[in-house]
Image (cartoon, rainbow, N blue to C red):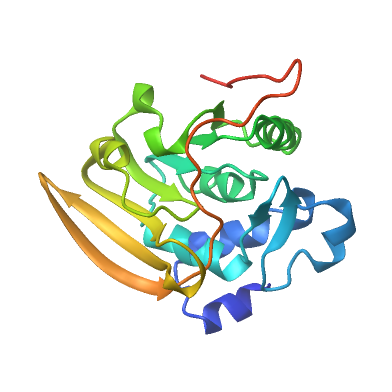
Length: 214
């Protein structure tokens, strides 16, 4: 999906548009889907997971209001595509993935492509990554039934959380949340469809790496 189409769909942040142009999306999808990588729809990446459509990636990224100095947490690394976009827009990106096979593939892919400010951990995304909190922005790429309290706790004062909320199908809502002291400002952005946020960690394969920390 090209820059012009994203602009027509109300993506206006020039830094987000530049990042979307710069990251080779075809490198983050299985080879059989490479020719369709820029179609405006999600694609399967294995293990029951998907890579979100370009517009949703751009929309969620724009909502984070990144300027370049931020520390960002991503829940659901998947293929690593969203993390690659974020790496061009923030100072540091920490991403949690519950499926070790996906985490390892994303880690290798990001290193090969030169995105060195992304750190990946295999873990329960609901619990975030508290060791590196607080975060200026948190993005969740799977749908939670409720806003996870640990993520709210790890969000800096003034920080932004973008998360799909809802059980399944079109009942899911993309929510924008800003933390103001002990209060949360919330607004609904759009109806969305995401894979569910699953608690716990999937059983790892033999010799799988567990985390990639600074």
